[in-house]
Structure formats: structure tokens, C-alpha cells
Image (cartoon, rainbow over all chains, first blue to last red; front, side, top):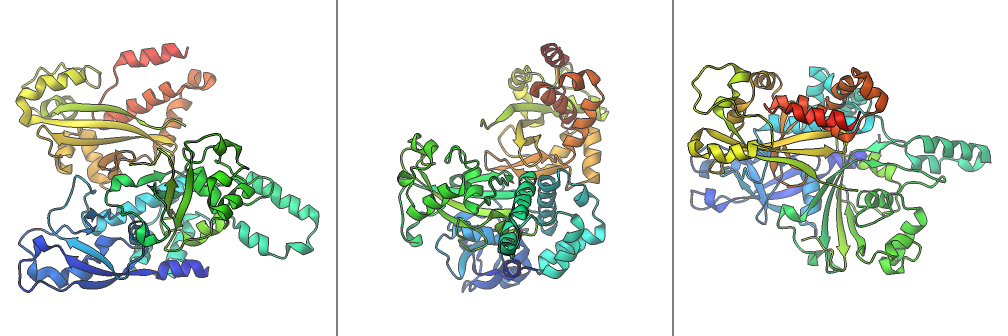
Length: 351
Length: 183
């Protein structure tokens, strides 16, 4: 069991939740509610903790819980940790959210009929992930009722051991961890064994389920505090496309390679960038210096730079092997959620 | 890489045109010889706007899913005044065989999902079986297997199955064109 995975499962975000003023019918207004929200959880699941706190002040009506952050309605089917990483660029603790029990914005958000909606959104994502990894989702469809219940309950309760027990039956394997291979005592082995691993590596081209949330800035910022707010979902490009791990010449496939491969419109020709290009990009932080990448230097529109990559609340180095990132930082539905801020210079900034 | 989606918008389901499928008995307000699923439906849409309180409007989009490597049918439904239809109302519009399936598998047949390009809540027909039954469809036709099949053929065959779920039929002429193109 990896330590990183344990951290992910135990990770939570302190929330300070305010009831929206239009739903306060008593004086004095209720104080905000403080709760710890699991990173891998979903906001509406907190209703049992929040509702008692506000129930006496609510106007009559039927409850449909939803949350907003600075006026932006939050999509409940995105894990709480991902929402925090994406929308709270300069991490704020506690995170101040507003809760509503009335007036669900059904033109913007998918309806949420309580825990069942969330559970099935989770299961359907798991199915999608299984399809990406195995080319079918039979293992999920054929899961027994008790197993399905245990799996979902392990996510609700943050029980990693029980999750591992059930999820191992799904045969969604962990992906080959090149990093672990590299730190094994290979130095004692002969040249021949190195060649063997290279051959094996080329054969194995896995597809990895990834959800990428991309927002762009046109002005540079040094301090996260100065980053512009995401006040509209239309400012976030949501890219739901598997990443294909490529390995050539025995070089490992880095997080940088992975992110760039999903953004071909910004990083042309980098569906497979080699390692040197990547590290040059990183060390200088400036596209113009990147004379080793002939494609981008001939395309003036493509002045894109990866400003920020955040996964599970951390900003990993882009040179890190992607397989490590997947194996350790994915969410329980087998998707790796990556928040990316791109800095675009020139006219191509997304509005 | 080209991205996008195919659309068929503002299709009107007059409650009574669904009768053939669901075998409900009721007197038809409209002539029920209206063609289904053809381009002409767009004209039909403006035609029936007069008796608007009976009409549900549907937008259909076909979006390619990289995860499933298959097309997915997304749709949304709204009243003439723009209010979205509730899921129960949609269920009533669906052909009988679909509403039965829906009651059996509420969460895995038609799901509420965000439109990948429009960032808004739409419905989608869940695609996890698509590649399996598409293989069946193509394996049973040896001529197609021999010559391989083009994307138009794939889409038309796919739609001939998927369309029935929501009561859209493919005009025979469309099949002819596709077959002609590939023979």
C-alpha cells in the first residue's frame, strides 16, 4: 500500500459553510458550519452534517442541496478535492462555501437526487475508467451487489483497506510503475536485461483514464493570490480523453508528456515529446528559449506555457514519471483528475 | 484533429405521434403520417407550434467519446416556452420499449451527464455496450466485413439502433445512399 495513496484517502479540506442569505428566515442568522470534507468525497454527501445546523432557519419547501463558491455553482459530481484545487487557486483554509437548500440551478447543474445520484455517477465513471483500461466494462457490470455496496461504502467512509479488497477484484490493475523499476538495483544487471525491459516497455501501451480541467491566463502572475478567479464554468475546458502512455528509446513518459499530449492545440507535435524538450521547457520556463522543439518555434500562435499543474492538492514536478502519478494520485473511480493552468501569450487566450 | 458533434435540433415530439410505438389509444390531433427522423422534421417543427402545449422539443447531439471509442447520443428536452422537461415527462415521450427498460435500469440506461462541449446538463444514452452490439451488427454482414466499413456506414448502422430508443427512425433512402457509396 503506497503512502501517497493513504495520504490521498485521508486528505480532507476544512470547509466553512454559510447558508445563503435568501434562505435565512430567523434572527440572528445562524453561524457558519464547520466541517471536514474528504478530498475523494462529493459535496452533497455532507448534507447530514450540514442540514441539522441550518434546519431551523430554512423557509418551507423541499430540500435540494447545492453549493456555490463566490457565486459559481459547484458541480457535485466533481470530487471535492478537485473543486478545491481548481477553484481555490490560492488555497484558502477554511474554504468558504455557500450552501443552498432551495432554488436548484437546473439549467447549470445536473440534478442530484440524493446519495443514489452520486453513487451512480461514481459507478458510471468507474465503468468508463474500466472501459478505458480494459476495453470493456464487464467487471463492473458483473460486480455482485454486496461488492458494489462495499466499494461505495469504502469511498463514503474513506476506508482504503476495504476499498483495496473489493477493487482488486475488478482487475483494473495498477499500471506499470517505471519509477519503481528504475530505482531497483539494476546496476548489477547486465546490458541485456536493460534491453529486455525496453522491449517490454514498447509493447505495453496502456490507456489511462484522465479528466483534465484546463483554465488559461493571458497575464503572468508570480503570486497565486494574483491569479484571476474562475467565476464561470465556461472558462474551464474539461478534457475527458484517455492518455496513452508511450515509451520510446527507454525514456520514461513524464507528467509533462502526459499533459502536453492532451493539449495538441497548444503543444503541437508533442503528442510525444521527448524528455530533453520537457526539461528545457521546465528549467527556462520560457517557450522562446526552447530552440529544441522545431514545431512550436514555427508556430507563433502556440505560445503556451504550463503555469500550474495541481493533482490532489500538490503541484508535482512535471518531470515526474506519469505512471507514478497515476498509481498514487488517482481517485477511487480510477480517474486521475488534473487541474492545469496554461499561460497563453498572444491572441489565442480562451475567453 | 477535428473535434465537434453532429446535431439534430428542435425535433418536436407531439405526444400523439408516438402512438405507433407505445400502442396507446387516443385520437390524433395531427395527421400521423408525418415522417420520423428525416430532415423534413425541422419544417414539421414550425408547423406544429400552434398546438404548443402538447409538444416537447428535443435536441439530439452525437458526440464521439474517446473513452468508449464510440459515438454517444446526447439529448435534451424542453417545452415550447423553453422550460426543460422533467425526466418523468421525457419518459412519457419515449417509445414503450424504452420506458420499460428505463424502469428496469434507472441509473445505467439513460443518464444525466454534462454535454462535453456545451458544459450544460444533458441526457445521454449510456454507451458501455455500444462496441459489443456494433460488432454483432457488422459481423453478421459478410459483405461489409470483406470491404471494411466507412464511418458513414458505422454511424448510420449505429443510429438505426440508437435512434429507436428515442423514437427516431432512419429514412430508408439514407441507407441506400450509404450502401451505394460503398459498393
